[in-house]
Amino acid sequence: MASKLYLIPTLLGNDDFQRSLPAYNLSIVESIQIFVVENEKSARKFIKTILPEKKQSELEIHLLDKNTSGEELHELSKLFQRNQPIGILSEAGLPAVADPGARLVRLAHQQSIQVVPLVGPSSILLALMASGMNGQQFSFHGYLPIDKVERKKAIQKLEADSRKNRSTMIFMETPYRNNQLLEDLVKICQPNTSVCVAANITMEDEFILTLPIKEWSKKKTDFHKKPAIFILESY
Image (cartoon, rainbow, N blue to C red; front, side, top):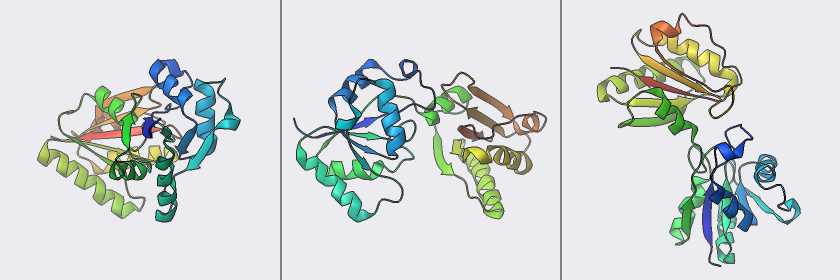
C-alpha cells in the first residue's frame, strides 16, 4: 500500500463521536497503525473512544507539537518511505488548522505523498456558521497577545480592519482567560461592534450568542475554562 497522509479530525470535547464524525473516518482509523499526534495520551483516548476493539499495543505513535525541531520533523518525514498509511491527530478539531501538523503536511506535498483530509468538526467554521456574521470574507487570528497594551492594540486593529474591509475577524483565547478577553472587548470596542462567543461547541451545554458590545456589557456570563471561539464584526 502506498503512503498516504490522512488528516483525521478529532472531537471537540464531546465523546458522542457519532454526532461529529462520519462512519468512513472510523474505517480509515481502523486501517492505520502509524499516527503522528500532538499529544499521545489524548490521541490514544480518542482512538479508544471511537474504536474500543483496536489494539492500543499495536499502535505506533510519533509526537509532533509546537516544540518539535526541524531535525525531528525531518525524521518524521521518513515515515513516508515505509509505504504505509499515516494518520495525523490534533488535540481537538481539524489537524493542520491552528495546529503544528501543518508542518508535516507541507513535507508530504514536497515528497509527492497524497494528502487526504477527512470530514469532521471545526470549531472555527462551526462558530462562524452560527454567528450570523459575514462568511464571504473572514480571517482567523489565533491567540491575541497576553500583554495588556499589545492586546488593546490588537483588538483595536481587528475592529478597524473589520470596518475597513467589511470582513469578519475570528480569534480565540486560552480557556481560563476567556472572561478577561470578553471584558477587554467590552472596554475597548465600539458599542455597535458585534461579538459572537461560541463555547463548548458540539457539547450538551453548547453556547453560541452574537450581540453588540453594548448588550454584552449588560449580560452576565461565565466562560471560564470552556473552549471558546470569539468572532468580531464592525461596520
